[in-house]
Amino acid sequence: MHMTSNATVPSTGRAGLGAALALITGAVLTTMLITLVYGLTMEYGDTGQPAAETAIGAVGDWAPGIAIAAVPVLIALLLARRTPRQRMITVASCVVAGLLVAGVPAAAMLGAHEKYQRYPAAPVCTDGFSAGPAVPVTRAAQTAFERISHPAPFGGGGSSGVDGCATQLMARHDVDVRAHYQGTLPAEGWRVVTDDVEMLRAVRGRQTFELTQDGSTWWVWIGPSDSSGAGLGEGVVGPHAGG
Figure 1 (cartoon, helix red, strand yellow):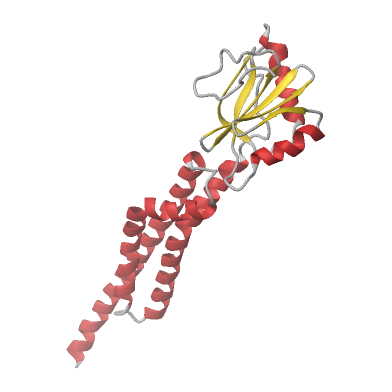
Figure 2: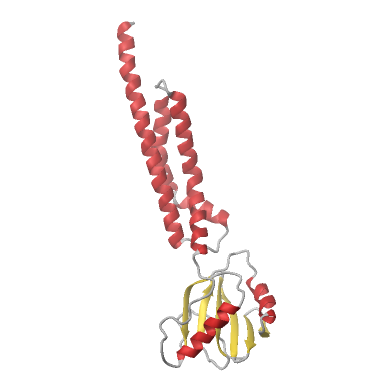
């Protein structure tokens, strides 16, 4: 009996130490994974898709990382059965496991939200223009963009110059972009001259506003009414001609 008792003490001690080390490793890996998911989503995430899709996609994309972080947590749970502090280690392991499962999709949603919040409320049309014929055009376009109420911020690619300013509207999936401008533009002094499935066009004074859609991407252009659209960057939709 005495020999069995002496053998049990170091055995339980090693199990306790192993469980603690495994739990710490699992917690560190979980923290690193959640931080990585948040950072990469904030940089490269799709801000237009629903939050649920972002969360589900993150779980699928990061399944290998989740599995790796889960291994030491499972080891801690198994070793906990052989320690006097089984309850404490089990509870702590379950907390880490819960953070791992919930933290990855939550981090992805928060990262996408933070990325969306960083988009500017209006595009910057005047950068790089200090002299020349493009200056008054880009300044006028900048002023017009800032005076219009937009349904979403701006970001992505675009073009600015003597033909005006074209930029991508970063609208979420549940935003009715066309309906917003249909109500906003007339209220802000613009006269709608074209409103069909291909384009919403409005004029005010000597400026033209155009809203076009390329797949799931919305583009907004504001420029001189007599612009032909020449010189826009590759892939930019609009303008389609003055009206």
